[in-house]
Image 1 (cartoon, rainbow, N blue to C red):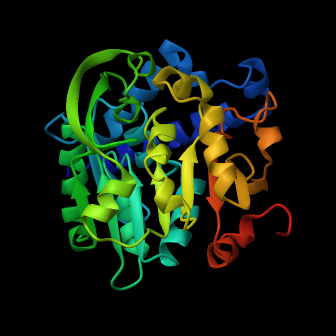
Image 2 (tube, one colour):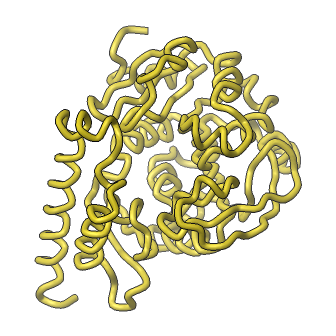
Amino acid sequence: MTSSEPVRKKAAVTVMRAARAANRSKLARTLLRGRSVRRLPLVNRLYHTVFRLGHTTTSGRDAEARYRGLTLTGPAWDTAIMPSVSAGYYEEFEVTLFERLAAASRTILDVGANIGVYACTGAAHLPPGGTLIAYEPVPENLTYLRRNLDHNDLAARVTVEALAVGATPGELTVHLSGEQTGKHSAAPANVGTPAGSVTIPMTSIDTYLARHDLPTPDTNKIDVEGYEGFVLRGATGALTAQPTLLFELHPELQANCGCSAGELLDLVHTHYPWIFLIDELDNVLRPVTRAELDTPGTIGLYRSNLVAIGRQDHLDALRPWHTTST
């Protein structure tokens, strides 16, 4: 490490956190009509330049950062996950919830594990003997996922599967994004700048659990850029046991993949008594009805993730963040 590197990292983090605070302000959200300022190409370019100056390794290909006591490495070209990891605020409220659920779980499924932020934080909080199964179909992401597990001495707790997850076993073509590692998707319209595609073997949750003689998981985290409904179509058996679900709701992405947000929500509301909207602005869980989720303005920037709970112990684990008693 050069003598200037800590200074560069600190300066980069300071600038990035200031930009994030501005983006979350009420004025910015009003002027931008609920969209992120980083949708503006010049702003996004400047943000990523600051990140690269502070966190790119000597190879120029990788970025490395400390996050919640872990050391995580990812591609320096990524404009979303690695910058926010390096600044310490990557999905910080959602990860806090996930860590709390992991501590109350024996088996976790991480569907769409990417470079391993959730896989690593979840595995670090599992009780002794617990296991996490991380599904990640994109080869570059898999390389970083395995590296991060190894580097943080978590590989023994995590089974990595180079598989897509959907409604039925088969194959899935994943369209790659040239902007973000988290924008690879089954729908080409979801990736932004295209960067080719890969065809990957696919399983379903019910098939995988049966094939490996595994119990129903306690917690499922699903982040698959619009393919969430297909994942739950293939988990109808597992859903009867009501494993806690953390998942994204992006109606446009889900429509582009061919399984609407409405169908996804119908599946969830059929099985779960407690469903909360994760409010990242106020760091609270807001109970939400099916009708409210159809109301314009309910879902938007900083309010696009849900948690569905069927177990009292998991409900109690997250009780500090409930906005009303349940």
